[in-house]
Length: 103
Image (cartoon, rainbow, N blue to C red; front, side, top):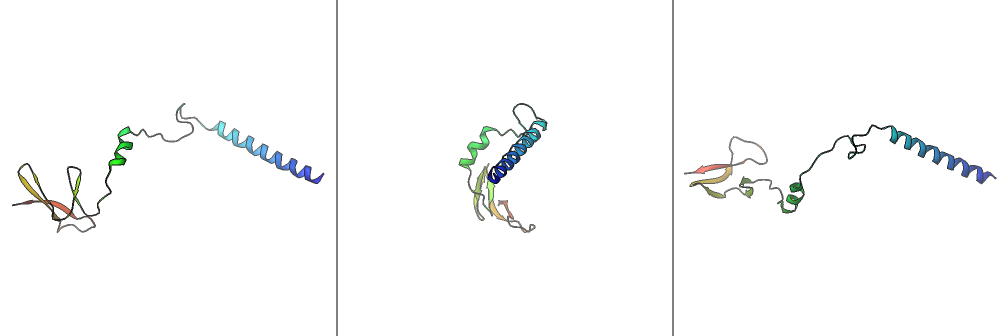
């Protein structure tokens, strides 16, 4: 008899907590049909998913030119001008490389 009363109390507790959770969910304001109960919906373009596969790891000390990473000392020619990746004497930090014109 005691087992049945314990089982009955457990069953009633589960049933009431499920009913309370359902009533709380039903009382939440809906953010439109597609959003459910979310606060913010962010549209992500399909390109974001495809670029992740082609993305190179970030370079900690690099100069960037036309979406390519170059290390210190690299020389690039652009429109007849030579550019060299060198340290910036006026900058203090972890990535203080800049492009300078080579004469």
